[in-house]
Amino acid sequence: MIELAVIVPTFKERENVVPLLDLLASALSGIRYEVIFVDDDSPDGTADLVRELSLANPLVRIVHRVNRRGLASACLEGMLASAAPYLCVMDADLQHDERIIPAMLAKAKSEGWDVVVGSRNVEGGSMGEFARHRVRLSMIGRRFSSKICGCDITDPMSGFFLLNRSFLMEVVHNVSGIGFKILVDLLASCKRPVRIAEVPYQFRTRQRGLCLCRPTFA
Image (cartoon, rainbow, N blue to C red):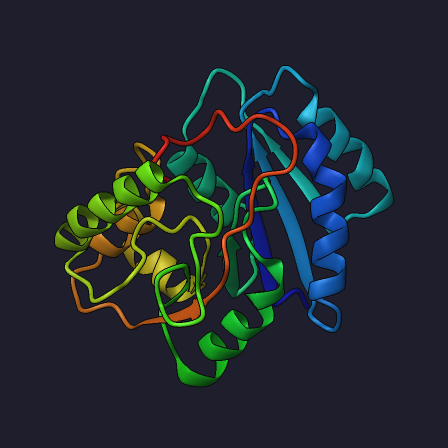
């Protein structure tokens, strides 16, 4: 039985698909997982490539959205398309460190957290080579988002997190699904204190492709 679904929203990420799958295969060895790409009809054929790969590997799946766009709604559709008890959201641009996913999953399973966030702002984490002005914008967004979600979290702007399905189903009908910050949306939609843990990681520099799916402070 699959225990983890990795949800990857995409737009113009064709050249990152195979490298990401290779990295996940190495990092998640021993974990029963699937990868669901949610593509907003990329003109570079991202969805076509994933569909082709899925013919050889049924654990690679595509949700191809036409005439709809938006990071938050894409993440929600991907999560709801899986039956896995644990769901991990990450970007396709290889900036998120897939090697911490096993630690995130282990914490969620053994310690009962609702959400485990990959954080750049706890000890051991780093914003990497982000330009100084983008770090400053990220910190402003962090303070603003923390007030909205009412949670003690160092990196509410993170697009890299893992949650258990029961938490998703508890909040999904209250989530707006609008905009870019799906984590803030999920946390703010909960009517009780959310049990949150964080795992540090170092944000990588984007190596290929053009990111058109996020604002500059993401």
